[in-house]
Amino acid sequence: MSDKFNALVVNKQNEEFSVGVKELTIQDLPEGEVLIRVHYSGINYKDSLAAIPNGNIVQEYPFVPGIDLAGVVVSSDDPSFKEGDEVIATSYEIGVSRFGGYSELARIKAEWLVPLPKGLSLKEAMIIGTAGFTAALSVQRLEENNLSPENGKVLITGATGGVGSFAVSILASLGYQVEASTGKESEHDYLRGLGADTIISRDEVYDGKIRVIGKQKWAAAVDPVGGEPLASVLSQIQYGGSVAVSGLTAGTNLPSTVFPFILRGVNLLGIDSVYCPMKTRVKTWERLATDIKPANLEEFVSQEVSLEQLPEVLPTLLKGQVRGRMLVKLV
Ligand SMILES: NC(=O)c1ccc[n+]([C@@H]2O[C@H](COP(=O)([O-])OP(=O)(O)OC[C@H]3O[C@@H](n4cnc5c(N)ncnc54)[C@H](OP(=O)(O)O)[C@@H]3O)[C@@H](O)[C@H]2O)c1
Image 1 (cartoon, rainbow, N blue to C red):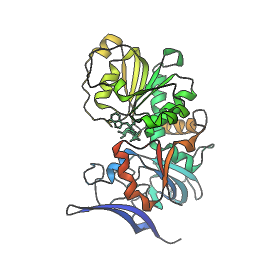
Image 2 (spheres, rainbow, N blue to C red):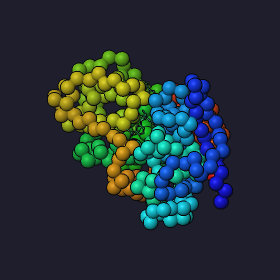
Image 3 (cartoon, rainbow, N blue to C red):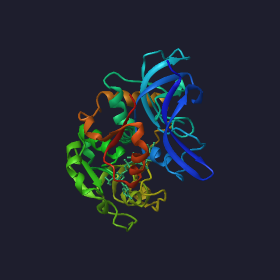
Image 4 (spheres, rainbow, N blue to C red):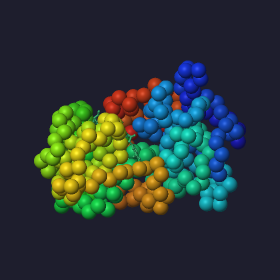
């Protein structure tokens, strides 16, 4: 096997920033027990931030982004994996402080790898990616906090985004009444296709005014948007309900009060996919391959791109205009 391969390299030297495909050698890869031929990756919000000069994601340049990858083991120094095994790797330090998935070859720590569960292809795993995995974690946390379909409507914010799309689909498949909030009027049919019962505009979630306590509209919410809209969501959750927050698309500031918590017993549940323990990771991927696997996975893909197309495509996610998932094909 040649030790040369292509990867997307971002570089910043003397304030000069570049993003482009470059030839690397195996010696350029970080240390790790398992060498993987990457078949697919995906585009997540963090990957787009890694491809802009002030995204505050990349810690050292030159760097290969891509927080998700799925591929086939080429060689392994760890007995848990052998040549030919199909594996998934998402998050930890991948694509943030260690070279990631936008690369024909990747070297990853064995302890970060999830065996591809039966029932999923490598392509399907990367359609799901960190976004779908985070949606699944959010739904699981809501159910662990006593959410069940008879409690009432569940709100999904940022519903056409990666996390939002999967949350709509998973909750609908589990029998929940799903209310999807979106800023994209043109995508209502897409959301109905995923299983949304009702669709509302972003303004109906947050009209620019945060009330201390509002009308009790939703039993729970999956919120990848954060910021001021999250404060508004919290004030409109039913007594004893929960919000699973995973993102910051609308900002990091949360101008809420204690009232939803102390007057209505609302729970704010933090969702982290990055250092999610391996036991939960494996269980969640197994569920994504079986009982909560969306039937229509191809419908989530708005675009399938090559390494060469990434420099042009990566920044589009930051504008909040992308629907569903963008898939990166490497073989
Ligand atoms: N905690 C974790 O482990 C974890 C894991 C994955 C992602 N995340 C975070 O979750 C967030 C979403 O990720 P994603 O992959 O779903 O991103 P995405 O595909 O870009 O989706 C974000 C969606 O939010 C909506 N939106 C955009 N700007 C908005 C604004 N100003 N106000 C309200 N809504 C807005 C848009 O949907 P509509 O047009 O439909 O409203 C957009 O498509 C990001 O902040 C990401 O970093 C966290």
